[in-house]
Length: 281
Image (cartoon, rainbow, N blue to C red):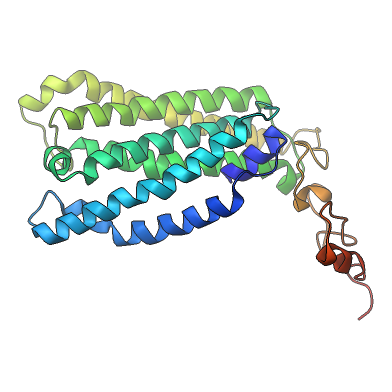
């Protein structure tokens, strides 16, 4: 989703497509094998701890390649700062913080210090919620006109994106700081020592309220866009991919006929020679 949005709003073809696809596959395999990182602070054997720590570090290599390709996508492009791009940039920043903080948890000495603390809460949420859910919101804003044929208020979307980004960092950035100070996770009641960190805990709670308020605002202007008389043009973002070659929302069978493609070659010539959709039997 992020790569698609970056390509559209920079006016450039995706940089390092094969590198991104291969890196994503490597991230999936290494992450699946590196689940033992959560046991480093427990009674795992030295051999198991060393293997899982190595696998957790290996994940950062393909993740860094993806990030570098996305940053290179912005270089030299004509950037149009719209709400989908803003949310995609926010997702990349949050994911980067999650990857960097995960390296501390992958270190064997670091796992003994931050393992079982609020640092793990912040790191996991930066990676999972910050990276994935922010990318989901970016994709939702990007394809909303295509799905429903309606446009939303761009200023409201930018404002909600800023509030959600601030609230998220306030909520889980404080968790990283609390974990570095030794505040444990998964506790039902706080001791007297834990109340010395009251300010950070209060700020973290306020960040959650800001995040929820931003999501409520997103739902509000999406709902309002469905009743507006303003219909979306067929290609509001000037996208170059195939879904923007048809009406918004797409008609039955998606295309009245097979649309032309800009690529050249024998494959494209074969495609152009095919019959329109629905013709013949």
